[in-house]
Length: 143
Image 1 (spheres, rainbow, N blue to C red):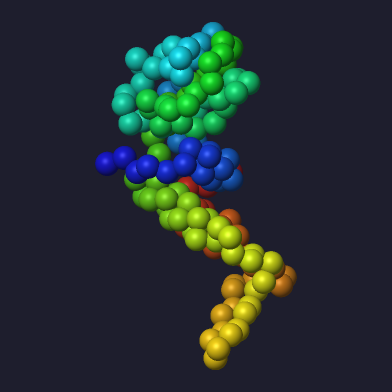
Image 2: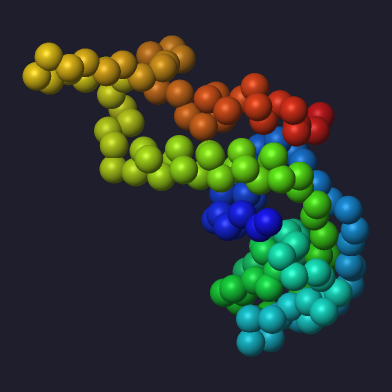
């Protein structure tokens, strides 16, 4: 099963926990032409991989990637093997972030018509995904 989530979200979460679940690496001069990675035939369909050393495409992608910017670069493609429970957690984080879209994050409580709501805070500021999902992310964190 492949969970579809934003490549930006998984890149952000992997960077935060300092773990990209890297299993193998392809190094050298690489080319992205017509949105296709030159070493793409060496990647299993549906696998996550991380591009390093690119001017336009650094980050985590799902093979076959959509929307890569054409370029030639000297760098690496790191094949990843993130566990399903991690991917499910990233999807939850993405859904949490999407649920905040358009909300007034600066407010920690509100009330109207007999209803009141208070957000969890730290130092009077609303908690972000890093704090809310910290205990679950710690299981995957590299030091």
